[in-house]
Length: 366
Length: 79
Image (spheres, rainbow over the protein chains, first blue to last red):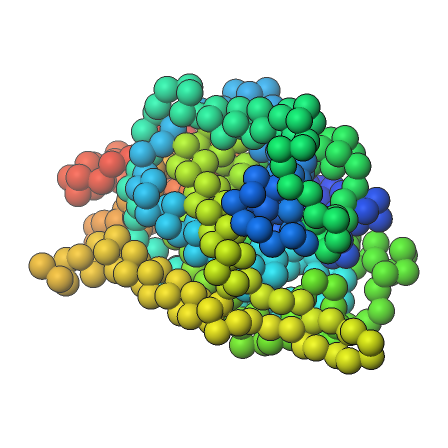
C-alpha cells in the first residue's frame, strides 16, 4: 500500500509544516503560516477590491509560492504554457471554492494547519472536504471533464507570475496606493523578505512533489495510492509536534480557536464546497497557484476567480466571522444568512457544472 | 527499495479519457489499471493507464478503435 510513496512528497510536507510554524512565530496569525484562501483574500483587500479593513495586506507568500513554482518548473524543464480547458467555467468554480473556504475560514492547507494546532472545528471541515471530494469523484467516474488544454504562447503562461511580480514590486515602491490593515489578521505578518523567501522554497518543493490535498484524497480513494496524501499527513504531524514544542498546543478543542468559528454545519458545508469544486478543477487552491506558476493559463484564470470570490465574500458579507471573547462574553462566531445562501447557490452551480460536463449525463439527456 | 517491474503506461489530457480507457479495456478483457500519472511523465496530477508491456499492441488498438485521445504511450519500470 505504501511502497509507491515518493519521498519528495513527505519531505515537502515537513518543509511546509516547518515554514508555517516559523511564519506564525515571526508574526503571521495563529494557525495561519500559510492559507491560500486567506492570503488571496488579504491581497484582494490590499488592492481595494473589498473594504474589510482587518483583512487587507499584500501577502508576499502568494507571490513567493507562484514564483517558486516557476523557478522549479523552468529549472527542471517542466514549464509549459498551456490553456484552453473551459476557462470561464474554471473562473466560476474558483469563485465558489473561495467563498466555501472563507465560510470555513481557511483553505485545505490551513485546515491541516488548524488541525495541527488542536482546532477540532477543522476536523469537521476535513469531514466536509472529504464529502465534497467523494461527490466530485462520483462525477469523474461518470466521465466529468472540462476538456483538454492546448499548448499556447509564452505570454499566456507567464501572465500570472509576471503580474504578481509587478504588483509586488509596486507594493514595495509605492505602498501608499494599497490598503494595509492596522488591526486584525491583515495586520499580523512576518517580514516581507522572510515571507517571500519561505514561500519561494515551499512553492518550489510543492511543484517538485506535486503537493495537492485534493489529489491526495482522490488517489487514496480511487487507487489506494497514498503518496500525495503522505505530504499532508507530514504537514499535520510536523505542525502538531512543532506546536507542542513551541507551547502553542493546548489540547484538542472546538472552543475559541484562532480565526475559526464553531458553527459546525457551515464548517462542514463550506469545506464540502471546496472539496467538490477542487476535484472539478483538478487541484486544491495551493495546487492552482503552483500550476499557474508552471505556465497553466487555466489555473491562472482560476486564481483570478478566487480573487474575485474573495472580494465578493467580503463585499456581500458571506465570509464566516471568527469566535471571540470580548469583556468575558463568548461569541461562537459563524455565518451570516448571506453566507448560507451563497453556499447553497455554490452547491447548485457546481451541480449544474458537473451535470453539463459529465458524459454519462449528457448521453442520458439526448 | 520495492522491486520495479516494466509497465506500459498511457497518459491522457483529461481524466474522462482515462476513465473511458478503463471501460474499453474491461470490455475487451485487457488487463491493467488506472494509476496516478507518474511524476516523470506529467507535471499535472492526472490519471494514467498502467498495463503489462505484452498488452501494449492490443491496448493501443482498443484505444484507437474507441477514438480516445491520448497524450502519449510510454514504457517504464514502476514499483
